[in-house]
Length: 318
Length: 228
Image (cartoon, rainbow over all chains, first blue to last red; front, side, top):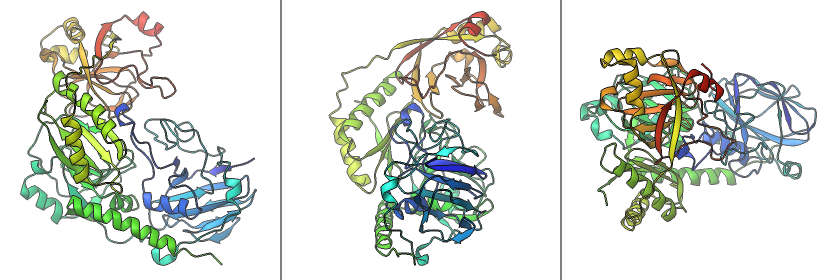
């Protein structure tokens, strides 16, 4: 056997790549990782092409067996990782040998972990991507969540990768998924249809993450918001859009969001904050803060610079 | 040339708004503008999402910025050839209308003081336009439903609407491509597949197409692969 075999899938484990772009006019969502930051590092620590197909593991509980020699890295939620029963660090590349057993325990901080393999998992693409969307039944293996006994093939390039250097991200750069969160929002869409009073209410109060949240959207609970506009035509929804349905409870729309929707929207949360949001559990309290589009672009460029600075300080594990 | 405005949607998206109305003229402008945008901004685009009367333009914000994209959008649309009118194809969709396959038929008839036969006839009468595809793969928003049939969404959406359900909401009509939750009013079932990822094309209708619904009986529905 080559590739990796799922022994235990845990609660919810799917294959994700960078996402499916350019297909929204068919009604296909973008999908891709819920936390693009941890996903990016999992691939980067192995020298993979950015966006290579990796596993997104929700809350942990995954067990794999390796069918070949390779390298793996796990980033994101703090899940205890072991290889053949030996504890291993996250945010670091590890060599595995054919027959090795890889186990991820339950997350103690954060919600989603990413397991990348050298060269990336190799599954056929649909509409240009391998990203799994359970609702649409496409991507991954048969469009579903992964189940025990399934075999995950690895790209051929993986064999040559196995001779490469392994890297670790210094602990000072690991994100803290328990840190307070203020979601930076670029005002837009129907923002002007919410009165000044309603917008103040939105920014001055805390909202709690509802247990009904998923990859489609993060539902929030807090002071209800009223929009002056009652009717609108359905329109395209961008990543991070904050929509307010008639019950007044905002929803931050994430990777698996519906492509079109007819509820008024306040604008959209910065992508790097959406990734942090995707690592917070139900019940977590957060706030919103308005930023301009210029600030948003600056913050994205800064984040990109920070990534490459950290990349230049990668360590070689002892 | 229609008047339009460009608004910010998020860090990587602008949204274009022509006049906010469900009309073939506006929707035709949307389609033509999408083509123009896709050609002119191909180097920075992530996705272009057309709807009834809007275009969401998503770009890579590490490659460019909103100001530059806005400028390029205006330039591209100023050069748009509005003479060119695309005519979509005509698609006939068979529907098994009945109280068995359309659980809201009787309620709609009562609500609008019509007979069930009149409701079915009124739904079949217009030649509908596909204004948008979205929400889910293959979910086509069509209009306009006869004013006498216009019915708001259910107060409380159904947890399960069957695949192929033919439904109306206000003056829109659609066919549910897969079993899903939904709040539209159900009139019947269509036996066709609306989203098949392995087929080319993956769906029978596209935005701009003309659609006519045609009543079929139960035997024909079952013969075409329908399931009640």
